[in-house]
Length: 156
Image (cartoon, rainbow, N blue to C red; front, top):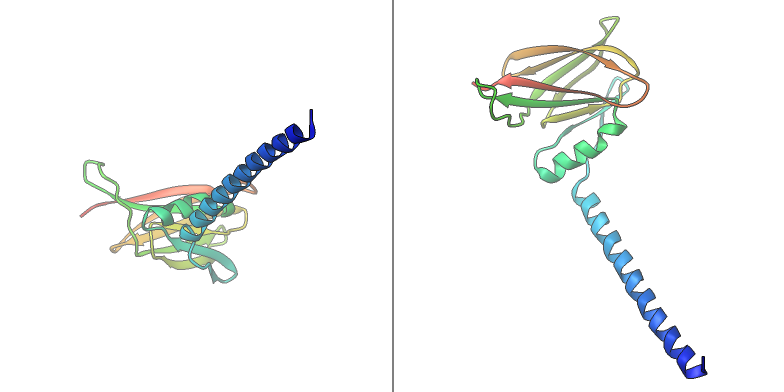
């Protein structure tokens, strides 16, 4: 290869490298945009138990779904038609979680259809109240993974 051919080949290679760098920068920018727009609200705490609630809107819902793996307890709240049809999400759910000793470890309002909590492994009773109607569930939180439960009320 002569000097001129080498320089031309090197120039072509550097252009393809520049395109690659631009593509990576574009993808990184898109990922950052998604993260900025799909953040969880700030976490809160009840007697040392960290929790977060919310999730209205597609970006927020996606952020909660993505974060479930980081929280040992993941609750979702919905309302169904009497025939079991449409299940729109609900908010303003009062949540009380008790451990096996009947000690309240979490007492919090859910301001959206999702509530994620960092509970220790163990067995819990979850009581969720929406529009004056309380439903309870027994949930086991394990060392790994997330205990997920959807609580659905009949729409009035």
